[in-house]
Amino acid sequence: MGPPTSKFPKVSAGCRAPGPAAPEPPGAPMRLAPSPAGPHPAWGRGPRVRDSGDGRRGRVFAADIISTVEFNHTGELLATGDKGGRVVIFQREPESKNAPHSQGEYDVYSTFQSHEPEFDYLKSLEIEEKINKIKWLPQQNAAHSLLSTNDKTIKLWKITERDKRPEGYNLKDEEGKLKDLSTVTSLQVPVLKPMDLMVEVSPRRIFANGHTYHINSISVNSDCETYMSADDLRINLWHLAITDRSFNIVDIKPANMEDLTEVITASEFHPHHCNLFVYSSSKGSLRLCDMRAAALCDKHSKLFEEPEDPSNRSFFSEIISSVSDVKFSHSGRYMLTRDYLTVKVWDLNMEARPIETYQVHDYLRSKLCSLYENDCIFDKFECAWNGSDSVIMTGAYNNFFRMFDRNTKRDVTLEASRESSKPRAVLKPRRVCVGGKRRRDDISVDSLDFTKKILHTAWHPAENIIAIAATNNLYIFQDKVNSEMH
Image 1: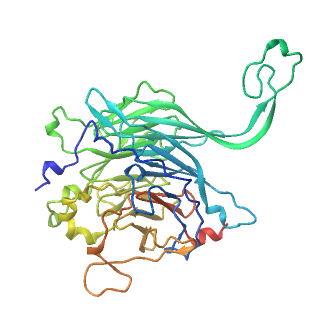
Image 2: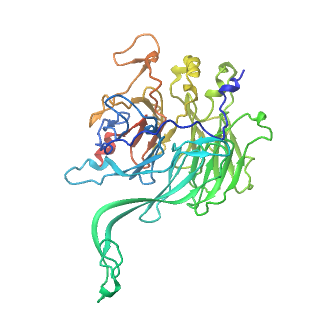
Image 3: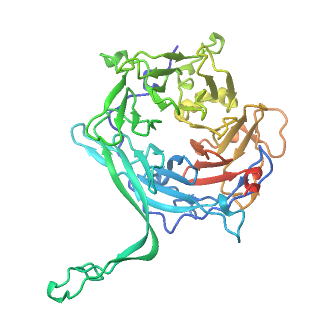
C-alpha cells in the first residue's frame, strides 16, 4: 500500500508566499578560528562563521536560514545562500608568520542580494527569493564566477577585485565631473594609484523562463561552456553565453498529470565526460543518460535501482526510498545517493544494487509515523564526498552529522552546536541510545530535536575541511592531521 496522494511529493508551478523579510543581520559575521583535533574520526571545531538572527533571544528569522553551501574548485572560497535570497562568500585567509596555523580560517569576502521575491501574475503565485543551489564555475582568469538559482530564475555572477584606481584624467576632476575645456592647457597621462581592496559582484547573465516547475538542482558541465538545470519534471541544457533559449534534454511529464508516478529530485553532470549525466527520482532510482545517443534523453543508458525487500515493505516505503541527493565521485567511477534513512554508493558498472549501503539513523525507523505527521519525513538531506572519495558525509537530526570511512568501515556521529563552539575544541563522538543501558553522554532517541537538522554540507575538494549549515549558523571543522600540514 502506497502513501496517500496528499503526502506524495507534489509538483507545483509556484510556491507559497514568503513570510516578512527579516532585517539584515547587524554587524559582520564572526571570524573563523581553525581548531586542530585528534586523528580521524575526531574533528576540531571553530566558532560559527555566520550567525544571522537574534542570538540573545534565541530567535531565528526565516530569511536567515542557510539553504545551500558550496566550496569552489580550489576550496579557497566558500559560498552560502539563504532563504532571504542573499549569497555570502567566505575567503580562506592566507597563512601568516605570526599565525602559522591560520590558513584554515575563512573570513567574509563579499555579501550580495542574489534574488528578490517576485510575483507571477499569470498564475497569481509568489516566487520565493530562497537560494536553492549555488555552483561555482571553473576559474578562467582573475575573476570568479558562480551560478545561483531560486525556484524559477538562474543567475550568473562575476566576482572581481579592485585595489587600484585611475587618477589624473585630462577632462575630469577628482570627483569625476567634466572640466571646463578652456581650463585644459596641457595633457597628462593618467596613473593607477593604490586603494583599499574592493570586491565587486555584478550580474553577467540572467537565465529566466526556462522552467514551469521548481528548480531543484543545477550542474556545470566539464566542458565549461554549458550547464543543466532540473525541476520536478524536466531537465534543460543551457549555454553559459545564451540566456534566451535552452534545450530540453529530459521530459518525464505524462500527457495526463493524473498518471504521474514519480518526479525528478536531483541531477548532476559526470565530472569528466561532458556527454554523461545522472538524475534521481522520487522512486529511488537513478538514470544515467548519454547525450550522444539522442537529443532528448528520455531513454536512459543505464538504470540503477535496488530491488525492494518484500519483508521490509511498509506504509512509508515509497517516501523513505525517494533520493534527495546524488553526487558523482571525484574519480567519476562511483555515485553517492542519499535517501531518508541511508546513504548508498553505486558503481557505474553495476546497475543491480549499490556496492555499499550505510545506515544514517536507522533508529528512526520505528518513529516514521510521527515523522510523517510533522512532515519531517519529507526533509531532503544532502551528501558529500571527501577529496579522495574514501569518506562520505551526510546530515541528520539534532544537529548531528555522520561520516563513514569506506576503507575501514568505521563511522562516527558528530554534533554542530553553539553551546560548545569554543575555538580549538575537539568534537566528541555522539551516540544515540534506542533502549537498554545508556552511557553518560548518550542521548535517547526520544530526546532528539527534529527542528535542528543538518540538511546542507560541503567538503573541501582537496583537504579535510568541511562546512556544516545548521539552521542560520555555518560551522567549519578541520581535522588535526590536516591542520598540522600547514
